[in-house]
Image (cartoon, rainbow, N blue to C red; front, side):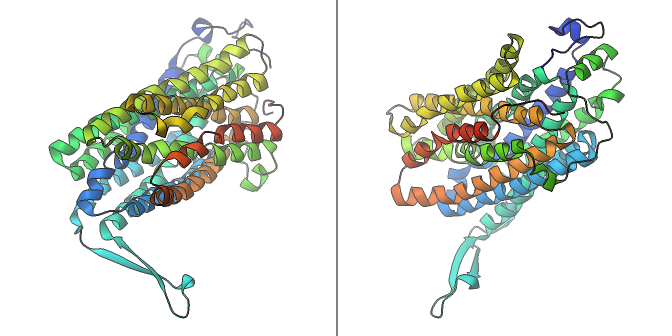
Length: 460
């Protein structure tokens, strides 16, 4: 692929030839939206132990709550991508942030429900002549399921919108780096969450903790409305930087219509992206929803200690997205093809995950967190390159739709994991089998991606 050039025709090799850096301000806005996104979704994992004690939840109840979020997030991801393609990032993304912020705060309203109130459900389609299958769920868990479902639906638009914004604001060679930087917001949010939430909980209790974290999204909305505009209408963007951005992007028809989902299935890249989402995507949910519980069960830690070690995990994980996002651009600058640069970066990430199977068998908590942190870092690097694979291979007007479709299948698979993991824990009392399966999922995903797309070529 030809290197981007500046208006004078010279290779674009640095910030000076780019004519400005406002595109990185946009990346910063995306970074903070993702950080807030992860604070709002991760808070429940940090508070699992005290919430379970205070509200009488079992591991199965918590599994239902986690699964509800992931099913809703899968649906939100799917339709969020379509809405981003149809209405544009400028309008659709702030609506998503506003809705999920309301949902995040709504968790606190569950404090109005009696912890002893129970809901009984009968499942007649599983009934027999002698028995009707029923299960009992605390009303507080049902309230959290409702709030988590709304949170998941709204948060589903964040990543498709962010990927679309990167595709509009960055040349191909910078996309993985920009994606890695904004995706590092997941780790910053996830670091702040376990550090701050136990302290907020200790000071004010869990309802106020949800109210405070839910309010963060509205601060971001003010910054978005002040700073963001589409590239062609952005007055803060110099003509030279706009030319640099456009020169490094595939040529597309500006008024091209949104690609129908059915048409997406005609691309081999779609099936490769879906396979990667199914196998690799759900592994991150183990860390997000179950790592604090794993640390509690494995090392019998208190809430503040769990929060501190979880924060350290996310600090370690934060480096992978930026490093593996930088690597493809470095390799491209040294003459590698997009195919080679993207896949070797993903292979390095996949190999870095494999040692996670030993995490439940080491005696020291710091070593466990280090092993899992490296795997989490590798996941972030993998994600940066998988997202960039979508923009490498698909027309611009189809990128958010593909990311949304991939998120749908990935998080739906994650919802199945959320139901299976408590059953495995009940049967075995250990996370060993869970981590063993996770250790090979990225290699399987990369194998499918390579078989389906042997050579990555830029979308026309």
